[in-house]
Image (cartoon, rainbow, N blue to C red; front, side, top):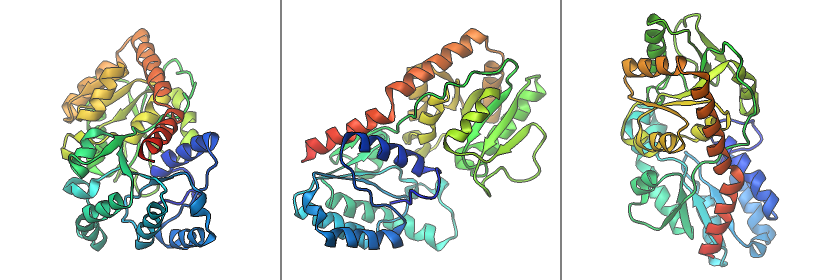
Length: 338
């Protein structure tokens, strides 16, 4: 439910990797696009008669609402006996801290989200989620499977001697993603003597607001382009504040970070903290700027042996959570539901 021909950004990174891995395992037809172009593509596919030859359908749902054509197409597939697995990647519409308040689109999205998910569930054999917490928030005790986000292959980029940057990838303005408090934390750490700078990779219009200090560097990069920034990177950061949604969600970029083979510095949101602790791939900190500043000092003063251990563990976790393993999970889930 996203266009796959407009570069690697946000959810399309995950979808393109999944598409490519599935294509190695099965004969794959792909229908993609925003709602308008998708309507026409689905209608053409339905009238082509190719639905009758399908063994299964896998759906990457959108953060936007599905169209009536999506529901009708999947309903027709189910009527023809084709199993359908629908992946629900997020549910931020249910949580006020992630809403763009005051817009009609946000108001409609918040109120129509659960009815839309119920419609998708009705035309799916089963639904999948990236975490158990998210599944419970959306379907409670309903039948579902877990397919965590996947990791690309490890980047294999060595760390330069004298590297001093923390890397943040995402929206630098949205408080729910934590970049404003991260800037404050880095400032506090520098005041206490840390030789640390911050690299922010954001889309245009999502870079941190206002005049930035010289130790903040903003880059435009996507996909493997970010690998070019890793030589100067000591650690990657996910500074999301604790909250109802951040506790239950697993950031897709966390799995990208594992593949960067750098230690992770993450706040103690439940799902992401559990993953980093389980992998022993970095430092978990409280979400207050002062607490994050302490963690930054710890990271920047860590020995090379400690940094290398965390990096090696991040690489191991990335290999264990590869896109190929996620594609295999999808096919196994579809076999279970067929």
